[in-house]
Image 1 (tube, one colour):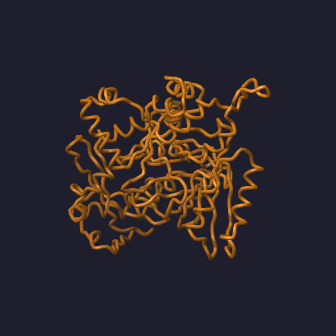
Image 2 (cartoon, one colour):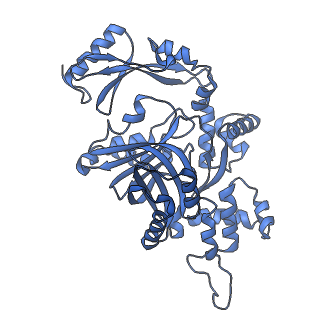
Length: 444
């Protein structure tokens, strides 16, 4: 029998024999070099008429085709079949399961809000084919369940800031999280920081005006007393985001205050990097709440009526604002994860580009997209991924490594976000650059 999907022939033979013996649907995935086996079943969603795939780990197969049953440590996973497993967890009625796998109509609502947080209920209702009352009820419910906040998607490059990813691995003593929070929060250019466990211990997402300033900031951070006695290795890489976003902290707008232009004898004309007072006010207020009434912004800052509304649309036209979007602050996920994919063989990776782009735009039945952030990183040369993990499955650890060639992947579980929070949302992947590239690749 020939090899399939790159698995050893003995493994494929053993898999077919096991399927025939158990008369069940079994999938296989390579996780950390081990051929893991999963029994799967599709669950009908009565509300939408769709189907949800659930998987249950049953064991692994060695390279000689021998099956090794799983040794589950938790009672509810000591099941003989996936049916028993689903019943033991009450997946069909478990509120947490419902939160992690919302109905199709709720997922569509989350997508519309992510693409335009200012969408009106009549507009939303028309798109979904439901009544305005039903749309309003569902939106309010989702906002409450997932602690949704409306904000802005802003590209810092358009304000002259460059994005960098900083990671650190500690050997021995790790600074106290409270001390780290105080230190990193005090730097307004730090937009996101997280403590992790795994291949890396610390993640920092920072935006700075130039590399000279970046070096000064990093030296200042690492020289702080909280790192006394800590041995660590730090990596700093330029980040070019290709998917997702990181919400900007209010502290960022303190940096923009110096760019507010006021007409004077010495400054009769506005510079290219300067902002009008109404532009600054609109950006700052709508970053905190992009659903805010424009009149409220006008009144708060003494602007002429209609100024904020005009300014908002003008800033979008100029590209200073990408869109009014959302961020979810409370998700029924087990944890979130940071993956760092080093490209060790660029030629081999180039041959896997279709699989790479497909993995990014692949839809999920969860409240969010599969990834919150994906970006090319200069050091180590490769790609960074930030993703929510809603459940343990074959896809979690092997999603990239088993399909993309020429790479090595470091994975770290995020223990705590100490500064900022990711932009968890449900972006319309059909409108992403990756979807366009994938379409072009598959039609050539």
